[in-house]
Image (cartoon, rainbow, N blue to C red; front, side):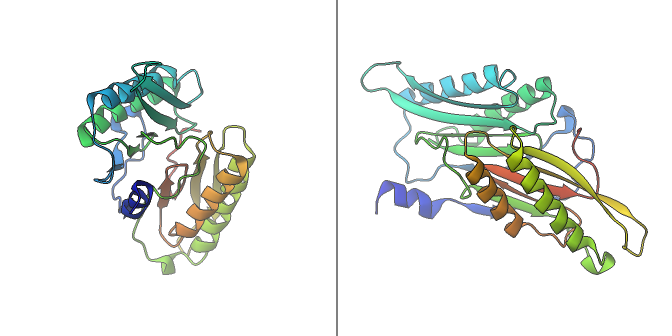
Length: 254
């Protein structure tokens, strides 16, 4: 079996149930959601690649603010010398996050990645406000729906007759708006009237990494829509190239 095929077969798709997510999303209570490290199919980890990965991580930290919450990078150590090894990485902050909080989130993630995946040649880790991905294989500009996790909040959809329709309408609108946005980002809200308990508002966010094409952004979000548990009182799907989420509370700062 080839190295690439082995990676594809062993990529972990995890369904992650998140309860009690805090409503106030400041950097102080930003929480880790999920992580995936590389597999045993990878090439052996070594000090040369460790240094290449470190250069990528430093680049992400120092440039994430000036690039409006998204940065991709590739570096090799030693630079321009035979025997060097390339490392590739990207970081994405939710577009409503303040620049300082964005940088803090990325720093936290990179430190956590070193703890979770100390000798893995690839990894991805998500927090509430940002995510970081790295690899020794060039993934930049390539849609990633293989790295994935989702969450949902248990609820009785029978309590909200119009809930599923509202969630479907909201996520569809978010997808269209995000794809048309230069930032590949959208946030919106949708009021649900006929609940039997009075009206309430549904809030949602959609976002893609800005290294992929418009068509790939739409494909990624369309895939997220199909995976989203729209009968729940809150749900989210997070890929390596996009994310889509809705809640019955306002979780963004926009």
